[in-house]
Image (cartoon, rainbow, N blue to C red; front, side):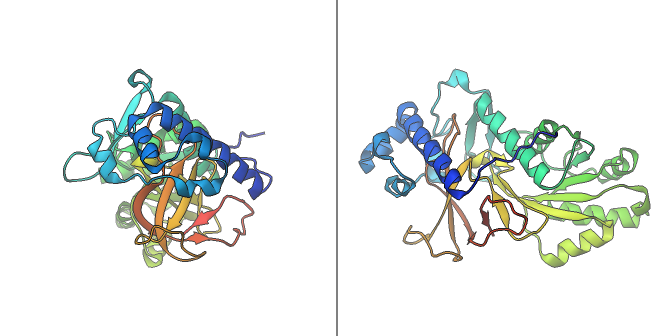
Length: 320
């Protein structure tokens, strides 16, 4: 039997119990390991012993991008520096970048989450995954590649650009999956047709990250390449990187990995929860992140939760 990276929760109550244990661990870990968090919690009059239910999350103070920049170069660090095995940085263009630290366990969790994304997209060890996103201090390339290797599929780490090599590898290596931005996917689709390569490639699926794409753009890409399916993968450096959720083959919303982080949708002005289905700011709290845990981190991104269960049968919740 193939290994699954999907959590095996019997029902939502089982998931909520798991989240509560993760929340208790995170608050105790951050309180004990991070002077920044300890000061924040004390100012809010909260200790780890006060966290007895998921509702107690509302007692906790918010963390912001400003906190990460002011804590440069190792913001939110909650472990000894000797336990940090890697850093990644945000892709901001002004000022000092937000740097996030990772322990070996953090990386292990991230790669499992990413392998879960590939599994949800229907990939197997037989797939050949051409990765056309940025490498370096950015999280994208490493996440796509090491998640692929964790799944057991073949990773083809081409990186961004270099259209000649991209086209050559699609033909010569018979890549079955392409991971890239929406604009790169459209460019590749047009180039494949312009060069008369459509009948020479074996591309089945594309996983899109980093950019939003319209339904018209996706339809054009799919038609030009004759794809079976396309998927959206969300992610941000502060929350591991890409790979924190995926829209399944039903495309009814983004399943997010609620066993790894709690997602609140709040009114950005009042910072109170919005009603089900209403748009609000994504606020995330990690449940097992060691080096740089996030506690009520304000992402500044807007979305809405989708309350209806997905017709795919997976109980993991969804956002838009």
